[in-house]
Length: 450
Image 1: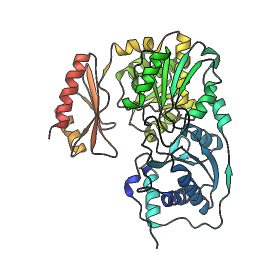
Image 2: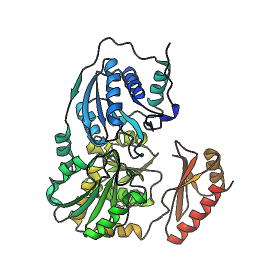
Image 3: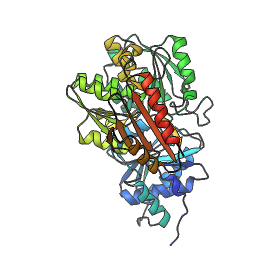
Image 4: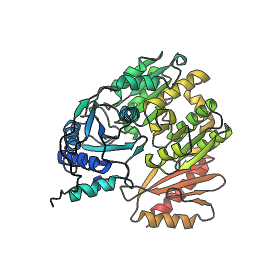
């Protein structure tokens, strides 16, 4: 038996991802294609790719591997991840997106759909692919699969625009920064269908990333957008990660809007259209989400972090919307998947209908809920530290949905371990700034104590 050496660390909780070509190269792509086809045994597979310099060669090898196992390939070419999800959903096919999302340019990777909205994850499929590759136990196949190219962009634009009442968006000016990632071309086609004034930054996909990085969660990657919103007198600024499945907003003051506040705003708005609807949010989020949803007569349910948990829960609970602190927003009406473009349209519709600025919509939240933001700490044994924290704060309400969440009357926090690094991630909230800062510093001291 001939076996292939593959770096086991590239097989992550939600995708396959590593540095090209040291950890992941064309041979890896070919092997992933063969393993995916052997594991799922599909007749056809959708393939898309991002703008990274390594993606064309890795995607070509991936498609070669799929076809070696007699799977036909539908090649979308260079697309955003939400276009890829649209293709998998409307064609009712599994798929592989060649992307490393928001990682630096030297990375490459794969996001894999089993059956929309379900993706392969570390516990369900990804480690199976690793074992197939390591043992070379691919399914015996005779013949070669066919290859066809397909452009799904027109249908995607219609779908996204159709999720709002575009005629109501009048009078808005927005600045959008796509960071030379995958969203720029399709964003222009969507926004030209809207009655808005639009200023674009770095809309051309460029794997060299000549302007800034692909992760808007990092302050340096959104600093220019924050300045431009104020300089342009815009109503809002929108930012997208490298492959376009995450969304971030800058308000009219040039301030970054936390993802849980965006989740609360959109959830409250969507409940107005469907009274009593169910919304899902992750364990890191502000109490604002729960309170806004319940005040509007809806049901708010908490879930573990990650698409492999939120997407099935959204479907299982017949929910309308789910949001994560990290900028992933999932919509029932977008096949249960996450999209960067859809929440940008929903926010524009909210501002237009309510005739409020984004800062005005945020004001009730900012005056009541005070957030630490996510704070990472390197620790020797994350799981042991979680147990130490749970014991230290055992007089609070303790929940074990993801890591440990502990709540008191006027403050609460979540501590969870990173999936890939020896880190603990803290998110803490209190009902006053002084209380938040006091408890933040106290919990951090426990986390960082040797």
